[in-house]
Structure formats: C-alpha cells, structure tokens
Length: 124
Image (cartoon, rainbow, N blue to C red):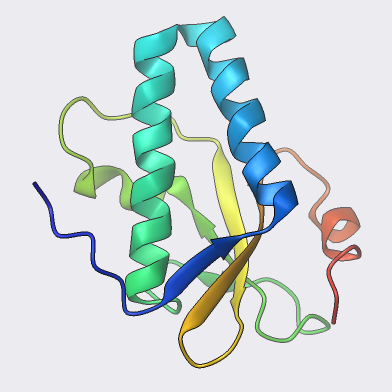
C-alpha cells in the first residue's frame, strides 16, 4: 500500500466536492463503474501529489491577477496510480496554498471549461 502522507493538508471547497461527485456520476454513466473507480483513484492521487508538493513540476500558476492560484492536470499523476490507468484524463485541479500547511482546492474542472469565468468566482 502506498504511503499517502502529505506535507500539506488538502481541503476541498464545497464546489470541488460537488465536482468530484458529478465527475463520478458522469464516469459511471459513460464508461461504467470500474472506469469511474479508476478516475476517482486518479483524482485522489492528484490530491495526494499536490499535498506533498503544491508547486510540484507540471503545476502552473494560472493567472497573475489571482496570486498563488495554480492548476494541476490529472494526467500528471497517472504514473503513480497502481493498476490499470486512466487513458485520457480530462480534468485539472485549481488550488492555492492557504496558510503554512494547507492547500485549498477550489475546483476540479474539465479541460473544456472557460477558466477565466470560474476564476472570477474565487476570492482574491
């Protein structure tokens, strides 16, 4: 069993929690329960990865007007997941450090979303 210790506590906003639920429901409907489980494990791995290093390679600052807000694509965590991998992850995590030991996840969004519209809802 992999060690899932994090250097940072990862806290999901209500919106991010709802994103996870909706992604799971859509995945079950479109690809079946096994594929949905793999995607859920991938999301968990990405959150663990962010928790171990919020500025990890591959993460990007998304906009200078939202200081500290970063994006991390799920595809960057695929190789850390045990078992069959998700072929083409299509979501990214929007987050920022909030305090010395916490990472706040604002959303988990699909590649196709209008990112500036979603960022405008974040508190500066």
